[in-house]
Amino acid sequence: MRVAASRPPPAHGTDPAPSVNGCLWEGARTMQGDSLFVSVSVTARRLAATALAAGALVSAVTLPASAADHDRAKVEISRVQYDSPGRDDRSNRSLNGEWVELTNTTRERINLKGWTLSDESGHTYTVGRFHLNGRATVRIHTGEGRDTRTDLFQDRRAYVWNNDRDTATLRNDRGRFVDDHSWGRHGGRH
Image (tube, rainbow, N blue to C red; front, side):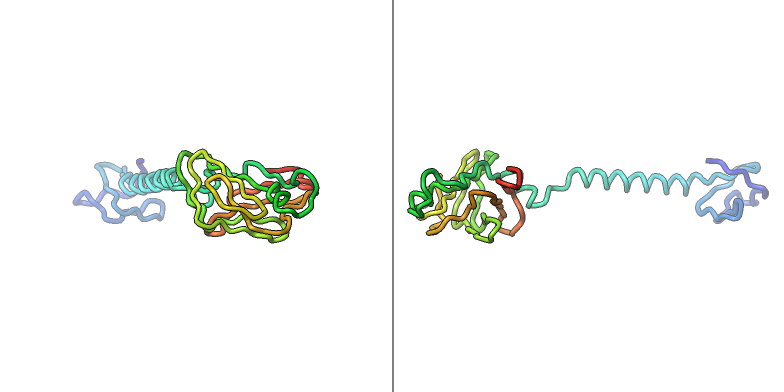
């Protein structure tokens, strides 16, 4: 960029800090005649600003997602049977008819140890030592039973999920939200 200067060039051809309209321009060079080249510092500043902006954009695009986002993309509450079939007689069979299914949507095996599943009333089940294989589903039953690779049991003697309305919330081992599923007056959102 050329800026017209009203003063003559110095005798040696360089001016460490020439003044144009009251502004000092560092790194400017004078040319023969009445023109002043200020492109060195202005261009350097523009290039630096462009490089910083491009670097910030690349960083934002390539940064990994947070752990919560990462888990959220991998495991979801796929189904909920909140009203066990038949009479609610608190038998173990009836309690185990109430369950929540978690599905691993990836091909990777995921460690669920320390993950929690809770309802609106604060009933919380913490998963023990368990790995959910890729593309697999595990059903978490309310009642008592022996854990397998497809079924886990909360070992409760009372129902957890309300039949009229409730929300099942899944959190990872750091307590971060992963997924939820609601029914009843909540509008059945997932």
